[in-house]
Length: 116
Image 1 (spheres, rainbow, N blue to C red):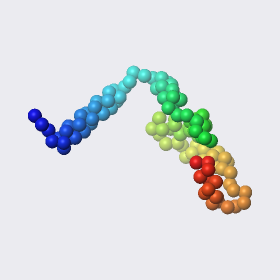
Image 2 (tube, rainbow, N blue to C red; image 1 turned 30 degrees about the vertical axis):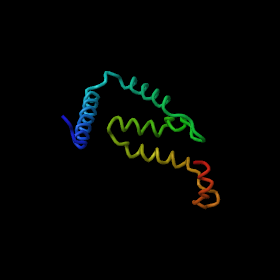
Image 3 (cartoon, helix red, strand yellow; image 1 turned 90 degrees about the vertical axis):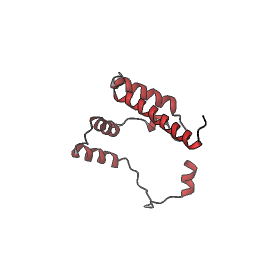
């Protein structure tokens, strides 16, 4: 029995959808891992998958500072940050901004391109 190309594509897409749905269904029932174990696995995947390149350092990109810690905890809890805590985090991060000394906010794109 011969199938048309469109039929083959439709069957392939349906098979892929069922496979993905099956994997997702298995995930929703729990992996049997604790939160700490999942965090450890995630950290290992990040360590194995990402590498330093140029001025970008993996340790800096994935470092968990107080801002990330608070925001991640709120995300996991499914609750927004308390308004007072959000203002505190905003003020803390505003202090880290280095404004241009000469007042010019637009720089030389060629210099930026060298960094990128």
